[in-house]
Amino acid sequence: MTLEATDVCYGYDDEAVLEEVSLSVNRGEVLAIIGPSGVGKSTLLRLLALFDSPDRGRVTYDRNEVWTAPERQRLEYRRKIGMVFQEPSLFDASVRRNVTYGLRVRQSWRDRLRHEVASLVGTQNGTGDAIDALETVGLREKATQDAASLSGGEAQRVAFARALAYDPDILLLDEPTSDLDPRNTAGIEDAVYRARNRGIGVAIATHDMHQAERIADRVAVLLGNDVIEVGDTERVFEDPADERTQKFIDGELIY
Ligand SMILES: Nc1ncnc2c1ncn2[C@@H]1O[C@H](COP(=O)(O)OP(=O)(O)OP(=O)(O)O)[C@@H](O)[C@H]1O
Image 1 (cartoon, protein in one colour):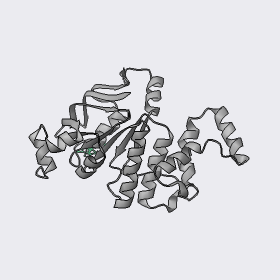
Image 2 (cartoon, protein in one colour):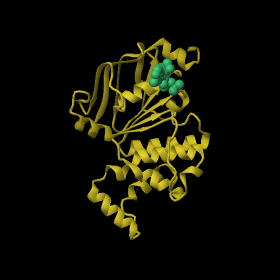
Image 3 (cartoon, rainbow, N blue to C red):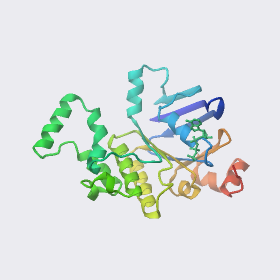
Image 4 (tube, rainbow, N blue to C red):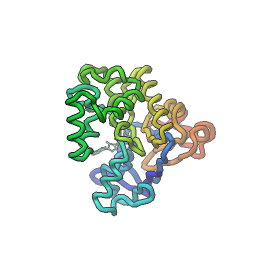
């Protein structure tokens, strides 16, 4: 399964951000999208998440063109793609409810009813996925805690768990550790590994090159309006094909 953008262009108010960008994310891999602040990493993730349609170019899900497909089909694709934003947005309820909320919305009324009955009699059927997801981000013991009392790093991990609980094929992470301390960063990176080992394809936008080097199988370098280079992480860092990549890695490119 591959999620792929081909020759996509996108801009805001006539200001071009992405020009003819091509990039794919495959199940079971971690792809890091690196590039300086403001270059368009979030914009590219939003196109891959199917939130926005490109001005030009194509986005395909498992080789099916997304934006010419019927809307129902597109919603199906969207359900298989999770996104975690830079700022986690949780609502004021327990951690477990935050993680299961989307799951309930997606259930049929019959399943929902069954779920409600199960929680009334105390069996809490249907929360298995949520607990599993919390386990993956290392926060199982926080399931009953109020989400409002979490630290920023823990909240980010809960947002990650919520995306995981949907059982996505692809998970898109937008700078998920930019505001986190090393311990929470390690928690997120660990969860990325686990997600990949479950066969999920993870694309992570980051301006932290060391993080890309630590966790990615492949790296895409976004500079100017384009992905100037994409390849195996080691190759890109050790032997970049584009001299701008080397300059960016060496910190010599200031934008
Ligand atoms: N809704 C919007 N309206 C107008 N311009 C926007 C909008 N969103 C982003 N931009 C502009 O598009 C460019 C790319 O922004 P984007 O957020 O995609 O970059 P980024 O690489 O993710 O940045 P960062 O690493 O700082 O999050 C920036 O110049 C930004 O100001």
